[in-house]
Image (cartoon, rainbow, N blue to C red; front, side, top):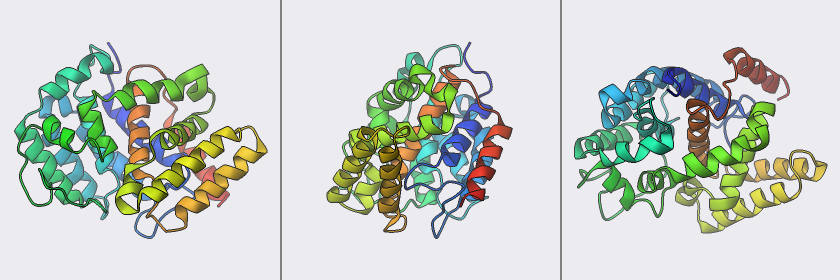
Length: 297
C-alpha cells in the first residue's frame, strides 16, 4: 500500500512547488501582472479534493472538474498543466507504485476522457496555446482517446509527451534527480529548485517555446547549465548566476516564465511523496518558509 492520502499529496506538492523560489516562476516573493502566489495557494486548495477522487470519477472528468474548481477561486489559469499531469497519476491504484500502474491508466483512457480534457483546456484558456492542423483543441473535437491525442502533441509539448512515454520524465528522471542523496530530506526548497534547473538544462521549456522562440529556449538551457556548472547552491558564483538567470527570465514579464517545467516539478514532487521516495514536509513548515520569503522581498 502506497500513500493513502492522495488529497494531502496533491495539496502538498502544489504548495511546495509554488513556495520554492524557482527562477522565473511565481513564489511568495515574486508575482506577475496577472497572478500571484496567493492564487496558487487557493488553486491548490481547490483541486486537491477533486484530484483525490480521480480513480472513482475518471481522468477526463476529474481534469474538467479540477479546472472548474480553479476557475471558482482564480480568474486566470494557474494550474492546467498540473491538473493534466496529476490526474492520470492520481488514478493509479494505491496498491501499486506509479511506475507499475501508470501504463494501465493511460491505456484505459477513452475518447470521452479526451472530450472532457478538451473542454477543460478551453475553459482554462491557457496563454500561448497556438494551433495545429490535427486535433486542434480550440477548434475541433478529439479524434481519439486522451492518450492518442496527447501523443499528437508530444513533439512540441512536454506535458503531452508524458502521456506518450508513460510519464518517464516524472517517474524516472525527476524522482531520481530530486531525491538523490537525501537532497529533498535535507532541504526541500533547494531540491525543487535543483530539479527545475536540471529539467530546463536538459530540455528547455515548451511554454517558453510557445510564447517566445527557439533562441530564448536555447538561452534558457544555456543559463540553467551555467548555474549548475558554477556550483549552485554552495558556490558564490552559482548563487550569482541563478540571480542573473532569474532576472533574464523575468525581463519580458511572464513571457519567459518556465511554466511547463513548474508543472513537471509539481508532478515529480507528487510522485515522490505518493510513492514514499520523500517524506512530507508539514503545512506549518511550508507556511513559515513562505513568510520568510515575503519578509526578504
